[in-house]
Amino acid sequence: MKKISVHHPHEFTQSEFPPLVMALGYFDGVHKGHQKVIQTAIEYGEKNGLKKAVMTFDPHPSVVLGKEHKHVHYITPLKDKETILDNMGVDYLFVVRFTSDFASLLPQEFVDQYIIDFNVKHVVAGFDFSYGKLGKGTMETLPFHSREMFSQTTVTKLSMEDVKVSSTLLRESIQSGQMDKVQLLLGRPFETRGTVVHGEKRGRKLGFQRLILKYQMIIYFLLLVCIQFNCMCKMNGMKEYAM
Image (tube, rainbow, N blue to C red):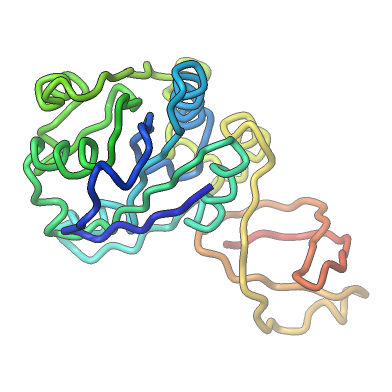
């Protein structure tokens, strides 16, 4: 998979890319709802001889669009997202730097510069995807903005127990320790990363070593784990999460 970092304004032109089918979205967590969108794009590309692309954004739009400074706890950091998308069979990953200038693009400007200029022949996105200033562009307006240069597929809502599968639901499930539900939402075991920090040395009194990791999100639950380090060694133990 080829990763392309895009900063606004960019200087890319159609001639630099093969014909693409592109899935659009932030895709935090790359949960089953996201996978439905991406897999739809992959299948369309394979059927129609198009390279498969995903466009995502960094940082999260709410960081830029929020009225107050906001720190977003990512379910899937960008590096992990890249690995998942690569394993799914994506050929190109466009990571657009989300800035106030980028957010100010009119819907038509976004389509012209970030879809048509990237030689996209088919767009796939969820029913609730929006684009352009104030999110005024939607999947309903996309045909009008396409200038008849590409077609589109709108992916319908994916629900579980009559609730929309979303990053918000996934984040809430992680934070409440509902890990069986988290795995159902992801379609894979949940993974996270953290930095080892010093604690209060309580493990010595308990008869085993404690490993304390500092995480982004606040999560509380207890389970048996197998931890793998960069040195490739492994350690089994019981882990209490307080992320």
